[in-house]
Image (cartoon, rainbow, N blue to C red; front, side, top):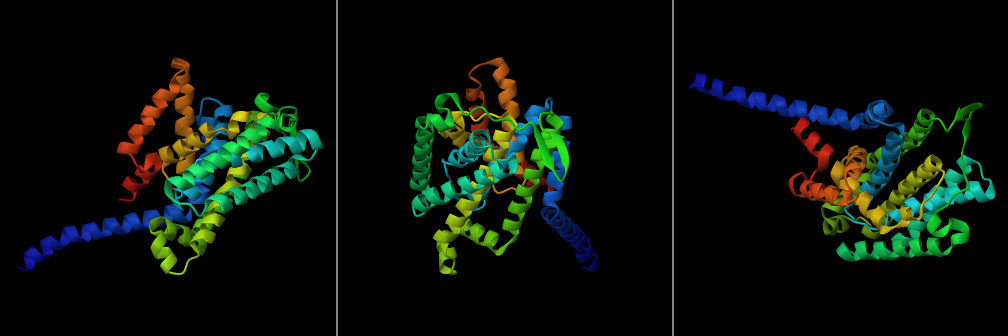
Length: 335
């Protein structure tokens, strides 16, 4: 009988050891997620076929990360985040091109402008729920789109905003050639690193625990004493700030702001990137942005109807990989 008990305890001990290792690995990935993410992004220009693609992954990764804070961690599905992305881009371009504001001042103005717009849209939409919340954000974002379309003397209308270029970046007495693709990538990488650190700090704070509690069960969170509407509004604004930062990065990168950045198709693209990478996963938005942009580059060479192919792949992901690429990978690694 003692021998049987010994034999049975072996698999139990092995299972316990495996679970402990998985827990330790998950804790290590969480503790070092910012540095690991920065290290991975630093290698990106050297593994992708073009530096321009790497910059786009960086920009849209930050954009999807901002959206993920609201959708993945707070549980609110917005179809209006293109408004904050576009606001950051337009304000940055206008500040540089029409008022001669230095690049760093223009970036700050773009982030503040996007945050104020998020505050306004959030205050109007946050008390609605479910599909009504999504539709209100979509309608208000389209209102911003039409305002930009009509204000052509400021935004360029259908032709987009042009006439601003940042040729060099002066930091602490050093002059960096911003027209060089590699230099441009690593300058924008600083913004991405700050965004990664900022989101990580939010998630590790009591506020991060509050938004996740709201995502899991809003009624229970309210019963526990959380001010649900106020917490959701703050999350909405923080999400908008990060998306506005991505807009400023895009404006500096392209020296051009197309009107399409405000279109609802851009909001849909943000949702797709977030889900492809894995909602509520820290590095997932960058993986989703990389996957989407790679598919766009490859399939657009074959057919002008590449959206049909990408849309079909997206549907397959939603059905069979609901955790996304990075979320599924993490689930299997730490299992």
